[in-house]
Amino acid sequence: MTRRICFIDDDGRFEIPLFLSVFSGRFDVVAGTDLAACEAEMRRRGGWRPELFVLDLHYPTGAPDPEAIEALAATPPAVLDDRGELRAAYTNSLAAARRLRAALRAHGQGADGGLELARAVSERFADVPVVFYSRKASPEDVLRCLGEEAVVDVVHKPTGGTDAATERLTEERADAIARRFEEAVKAFEGDDWPARKRRMREAAAWALAALERFGGGG
Image (cartoon, rainbow, N blue to C red; front, side):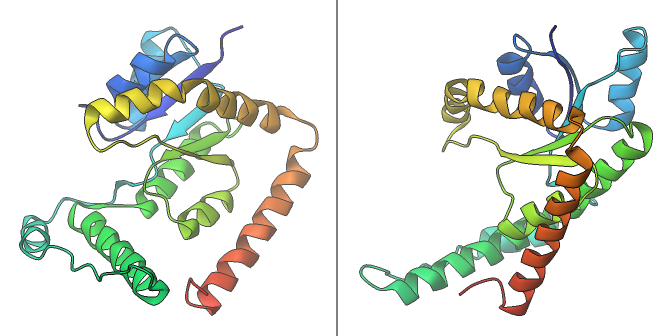
């Protein structure tokens, strides 16, 4: 039987059409930019109910800030020459992470938005597992996600330098991604899931505490 998946992503221009193009042949998919739109489509389909929610992690937390976006554009990132120099390479990685966080804030997006979405989904569909599908998730984001009760997995969203490259990579990796979705449903349905989830949450909490204690890096 074909699995039923509900996909929620705020990008209705690119991400939702891509997901439908790649995965609607493998799953029965309802997709929308928010939970309300998806529930409306479920009702239109006569009470259709998902077996898995696949959610965008960096989901809107507020409106974009045009001034902050303009300021980012006016200050291109400074990159150190890191040839043969590990300290410079590490400094570059920290600077890139800071800029990503600043860009997400400027565009009104963040992991908090996705986590709130997951909680809203769980309130409405307590018996349905959640998988996050993200390309910008940091290790800290992944640990926070796995600490949520209904979250089974965090799956990397293929990313190319252009939309066409991203589409090609998604097609190439579609079978592996689909297996992760299928495995998430089976894990959630398993008799041992409550114990596995408890261990997962404990491990995620421990790792998050360690990252905070050591400043996120070694």
